Image (cartoon, rainbow, N blue to C red; front, side):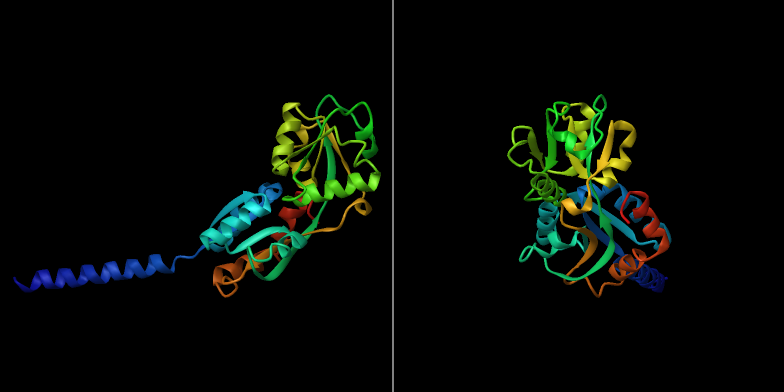
Length: 248
């Protein structure tokens, strides 16, 4: 009789040890992304989880914000955004490689009740306010500023321009009717086309090429779940998801 508790105790310890090993080995992944790509990234993550069983969480915001989060938490494996912007992060976050996703496209979107025929119409009386992401923190803010300069509108439209933190915030102002037009990416324009008046693709020669990549954060390059995610981004399924949202 005295031996039974020892046997049960040993069995219980082995069970707890087994569970502990299982829990410790459970794969998890944390991805961060520029806010303007929330919809395709979220859909891709759901598809990746279904295909691999790897639990994946995501954070969205302007690149400065998510890079600071990556530095503070030490938990983010990949950051999705414009390659030039990621490379310029310098001491905030170091990347060991970049997995190409596609090319980003700048558009001038406008609210319902406004009708624009060409991008140059932003300088007309049809448009009283133009919103855009901050040109120091968001790639489409930079692209929007470059486009304004290219059209010769930097000074002419200075009184119309309002900068906000992210692309989704520009969209919110357009949907609410508080902005007549705004520079955003094609991805958000397509995702919200029923709630907008429309959008015009800005010619590619008006701004610097935007290459969307997944930057692998230094220290995570040898993690098997990170490798599986970057491999997934090469698949036809992943390319189809991003392509559906205007990233070609």
